[in-house]
Image 1 (cartoon, rainbow, N blue to C red):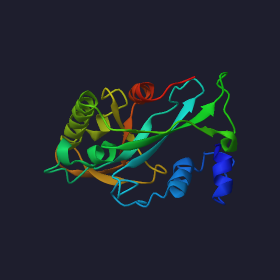
Image 2 (spheres, rainbow, N blue to C red):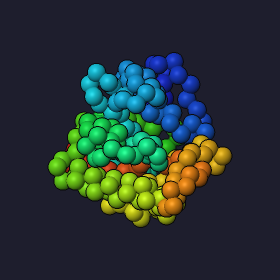
Image 3 (cartoon, rainbow, N blue to C red):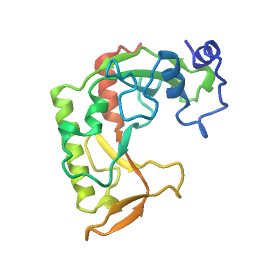
Image 4 (tube, rainbow, N blue to C red):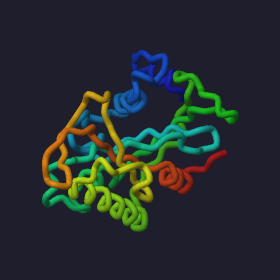
Length: 207
């Protein structure tokens, strides 16, 4: 089905574009699939322990952008490790829903005409979890050491930490290398494109 067809069945208005409605596709699918977590710190489908992630792809099956997972805590990290961190819980079981957004000529498909691809449930393999854990540890260590401002997109093999805020005025507290608090942009954990491409390739057939 197209997003327009799904929205019509759900009596939801389709926006002209996603510039001011970045999370609209995910919210639409959460509504029609019965996700109930809303903004609470638990998987989108709490009774199933499943997180919903939409994945914009082109007609050849290539992801078009990094995938936001969750906000990264910049304070209160004492006692947090990979086994009990929120990122691991979010990624323990994911319902991936590809959304075809580009034509073979890389021309953007209008939002209402974008079609849902073959959804699948994924849990990280031992190798994938090891990569995620290593990146999480590296990025978290930099935060704890007061180097959050030095983190850029090249850090991490499969995971990325970058600003996640509605605008530049949205600030949160962090600590510098001297342990002094300062205000900075909130950060979010994102899965890099090559990683989601690998997940996609392993789980669906692209015609």
